[in-house]
Image (cartoon, rainbow, N blue to C red; front, side, top):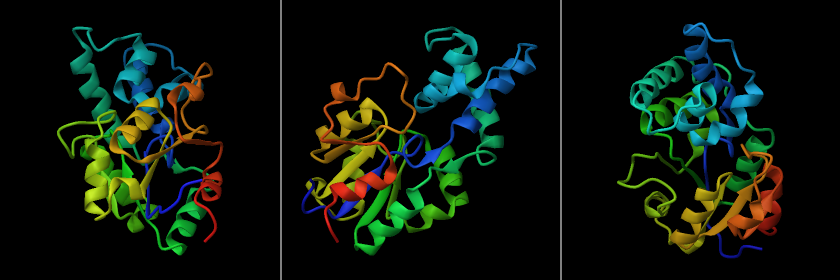
Length: 221
């Protein structure tokens, strides 16, 4: 489906790694520290791609305009820093996908809205990312997704034109950013999607239900 591709860029949480268990644990600790009952991971998982906003929303029904949101967000961040490598794992099929990307002499990288405070130690702790050509965090450029700036920065660091890259993500903002950057876009339907999510609305060039399906879109080696 895609031609002249020289690099594959990925979102991080919900696309390459399943970090929901650690994100949920960080938020749930805030509940139990306050004497509130623990919530099951299934409650947190659909909101994992939204970060602190999603976790605090699920744990406390709190929105960003709440007067205590900023303080609780920092508490959540501190909890997450202490546990973010304990339960996080690479999605099934991702190791094989990256190995095949490299075998085809393609570059790959990460563009996430997670701040470098978390992205850097997390990717350093997982051997998979040693072969990534670039890792762009949410605060690497002045703008985060859905702005195209992080994707354009990734392409520049790989010394490629945006049209030579495709971007894979599990959130609508990933597809919006990819379109705005002039890249091919792929929606990862196996990520942190709520039951009511309509991927067709996103307008991605393609959808995949597992990491390995991406290889079919890249054509034969």
